[in-house]
Length: 338
Image (cartoon, rainbow, N blue to C red):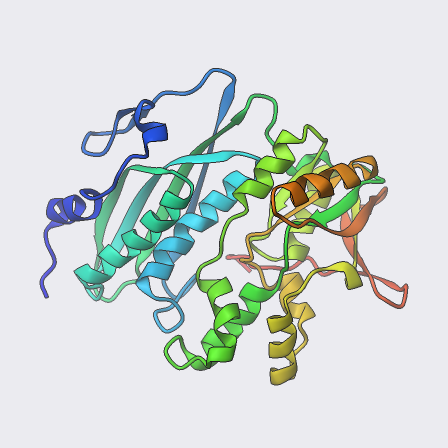
């Protein structure tokens, strides 16, 4: 079926987008003009982040449906806001569309974003659409604007020797899910592996966890698990100029990941350390804040897992095995240029 022209498509994709009541008074100029205009709040700083997803690099049609592509493109950005302790507010979307994508599929992409945005009371305020010659690839770039209380933004650079390391939930599910999807395809995937596949296709950013950490007032170094637990730990180690030691037997892993590893004869640790795209948060906090933070998470209906400690020395990440032996963790995870 022939697609509408650029302006007709923009009207189709944005016409049904609703601005949440909580943001209506702050959106001065929305969709339809040269740029959006938003008003800030006294006592808050703006946060901005941007990510691009490219077909055959970040996703393939045999592993993700159009709805999933939209969801994940927005989720990656919301997760960055969460890692700063912030509140996501507005987003902009730019699509590079090959002729092979049907109009209905494009609408699905926007539906995936819109559903996730509604969860966090976000508003779409602009973007762009361009034609990609031939069969692709589809590209989608999302920019998210958020806010955080002045002086309360969390960064990777705040870890100090003696701190304890935490993660906000199980890791490795997305990596295992991707392995299963690549092996079977989304339409042929056995029912028993649907949970790990969903962890890859429809990850949920940990905004509430980031807010609990930010509102605690504790000194916290924080990063989101997008490229893998080991990679994100390395980023904290380098930013904080310290050594992070992960304790192997305390890293949380879902039962489905253990079961999938057993069924395939693979090692689950490859996914827990290097899988990426779980969008949990990894961070460091002083030991005297452990109990208070754990209790704050419990009060919010969340879990907090303590998985290691920070020491002086080289900027590196090590893992302490159950046997007591320590080893240097490879500095690897997803890297576009390696």
